[in-house]
Image (tube, rainbow, N blue to C red; front, side, top):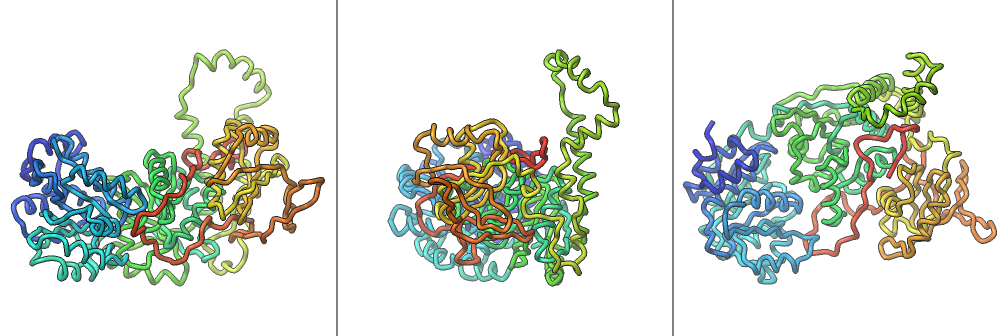
Length: 621
């Protein structure tokens, strides 16, 4: 294999690559970089996701760019904001030693005036989404008559998302003699159409087997009824306590629903979809990259451009509508020479959809059985023991307390101590899986899975909780994660337990440890003008909701006020909140114009996995 120096790159770029840890080019880089440097011929390049396509087209452009010319010389079009931002960030890293070079990312959902100011200062490369790029062209703020390179990254996806008109408008204002570079991970019919319409006698290069999956990824599937799909998802997460992955859903609504359920059930999770503002997306992704979040629930479009190399799992909560999308999904894991697992959760009628995918990726799916409670408990217990063994002991601080500890434990032998220690951590967990049904028994699909519940909070000792009314709800864009964030912001107490959450249209209810009731009421009063989405927040103590009742709260002499809405129930039978905003369509198209951002979304501050302190299912600050 050659080195980057052998590919014809200048020393400034090679030094930047060395500082970034790049040692040798990938196959697609080795084939594409010399070709673009040496020739002006249009190029079609195909390579699997995660093989370094961004460097394959950006490095030769940086090699040939005129640093003395502040006009736009290259325009790179990307289907999503995340991918555009990531490409621009990579180019900034590659060009750190090129004096006078500037790159700008332009995309909807962000301040267009700031993007215009960047363009006015002069940039050599613009990375943009089609909608925002056309908007800037129409405003005469983006001039492309000096463009030498047009890059279509994930071009098939741009056509799938309905950006053909925008692509035509961009091409109309670019020179005929430009070099067009098309890079894609898949080869559907749309790519041929792009080549015929937008390219002139393109050269084609391939890296690896076209449309195939990574050799580092194994593919598994679980067959369950639709009723048990979410329960199977939780068991898959529980049997993999170190999971760090993405759960793919087909619509924004489904994405938010699954994320809300996971958060309420105590998992370290959050959502990523087209309804979030750019600030919210950045916040979620920052936490996910730092591994403060263990699970990201996302749509296909929102997940494009995610630069995360250490994912252990990709889970298809629902199979994608287009077969090629599975390749994109599974390509999120098994990157940077690491192994990964791609999982599909399917109903009995969906098993036939696996065969076409197997033909595309050149691999077979392996059927797995949904783990039962005993398997999960064993895995979780051993994980806990490993964690205990690996815990470092601060001898200087612990030693002085040892005599008192030994005195307290004097009557317990070794086995009794171990049993009590495990019970302290796992009593609720053990109870949860004690009578769990076999989710692999499809014949029982019509029966309610009594052992599985939508929220483990229902297993908690409700006597330790007080219920609170808060005067904001779904119409204020409240969801469980944002409510937890609002509570966290009041700094009521460290490690306060949050119980059941119920989000209604104009107001909501939540439960907190009753030992902190005074502090809760005082915090929302003490902090003065507590607001959410511009609305003043009012929190009051209310009566516990009784089974079969419509709920309510006590105020003004004990008069009862109805919740004003029927309970929403999940597949397990417990009350749950609906997603904070309903879908108007099943697609997840990005914004085509600049839109006002919603306020930033607070994220659950829990760490990896679910908390397992005395209750083993506590949600904490």
